Amino acid sequence: MPELPEVETVCLALSKIVNNSIVSNIEIFRKDLRWKIKENLEIDLKQEILKKPYRRGKYILIPTSKEYILLFHLGMSGSIKIISDEYDLSKHDHVKIDLKTKENQFFSIIYNDPRRFGFIDFFSIKKIQNHFLLKKLGVEPLEKDFTINYLQKKIHNKSKSVKNFLMDQSIIAGIGNIYASEILYKANINPLRTVDKLRKEHLKSIIYATKFILKKSINFGGTSIRNHLQPDGKLGYFVQELQVYGKNKHNCNKCNNVITLINISNRSTYYCSYCQK
Image 1: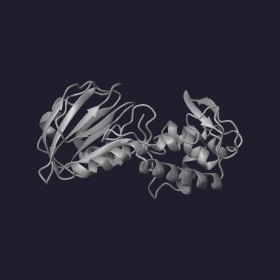
Image 2: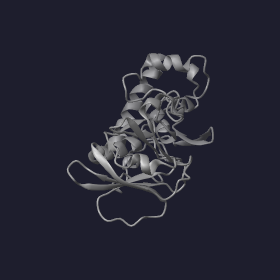
Image 3: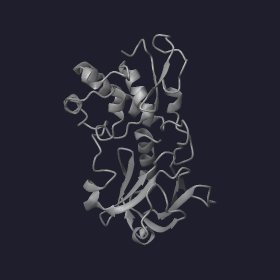
């Protein structure tokens, strides 16, 4: 599933063409995604002027000049392609949005999703706080509100594993399985450790590691483990920088101990039993 860095990479790519572009046409080839696309999307979105996209958790949000929001959720296997030339539709292309920029250039945004766990929505900006996908999201880990004090409040009276804590979208928005493993390796914290056993120095390490790993991955264009491609069709190269994820039986780069693979809540979890305590 695309996580925060992959979604941020898509937002950055869209920002180059979307801001102040007008929707000249929209075609929907399949509406039955994770939730069915609204019947009137083609009519409502056409001729809208799009503003600068931004990310909230794992969601892409594109405001319009009429105070609406176009939302993309990439789901498990979704991707967005930006096309500037003639294009033959590919298998699993479900939505095509044609844009005319303020410089009179023409682009198409293609939403492709083999497993159809993603979603596209269009709604009034007045409803954003209560949108069913957004209303329970936690703090953004790259923002200033991601603090030791915030984490201390959230771990109070909780005994869940720190890995599950990091992946809880109602606490921290945007972190999934891959980056949770990488963050805890960077922070030298065992993924099985329960959050009630975390001291202040542990929380400080988690915050530092989270920002370091996520920013580094964004700079590399995300991680192409399975399906994620950048909008220009290129692979994200952070996969080459992964230290533990997918490294079962490899040697730890810090201590040469063998990386361990375990299962936490039905998720593959990789860590070094020597470095991560």
